[in-house]
Image (cartoon, rainbow, N blue to C red; front, top):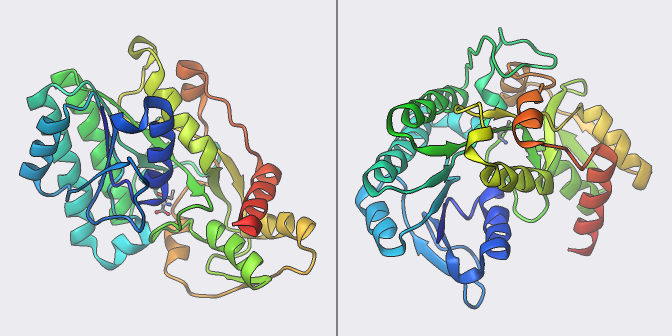
Length: 311
Ligand code: VAH
């Protein structure tokens, strides 16, 4: 069986659907701190707080998972409002899963990192797998510490834990919660609903982004890769596509000519975005597990507007 912790989130909700398709509905247990809005007939859901180690242990003993996906975390913007909670959730949630996986012999774990692990002194363009990493958001600090932990648990206990440094992820099914890259999701919702969007990042703020379908496929392909091919045991860079708010607005205008973009000044998320890379080098993902991106900015824009129009 497969357990996803944080199954209600932006990635978790779509990963749960993909895993049920891949492994069968009966073999996938979705779990989050509260019940989701809707549970389909036959779906298995368990309420659990990843900070409640005993509850997690009960779940792991009950379902004997061969894989665990830990998606529960507090993202960058919310983390700056509640730094102690962000650190507690992101670090102790991970430690609970790592220690229980060692204790119970759970074979494979997926844990997401982020481009947020890079900071002001990291190279901004074509950021490499290995470089200076001085994150200055609590979320980025917790993800960098998490990467050090997962590499340690792999080396010390032989844990097969795999990870991706996700760029900003763009999707339409579940709204993101408290991220800095969320503008690239909200812009589509507002373009359809209001024909205009006021962006909280400046027009020239380039960030690495990725369409959700690519992010989910990358996750499953990494988890399916033969362990002996993997040379990175912290977290794999994944490049996605880099664009600015002005560029994505331009792409939307090709389909919705009357769309109007405006920019708000002084949003605290600007400083977080400015500390992150503009583009990422993912040669290790290409080499170790043959990663290939499918959706470019044009494809992503078409998909998002098509799905939101029909949704
Ligand atoms: C955030 N969406 O904005 C997340 C992600 C790279 C960005 O980590 O915090």
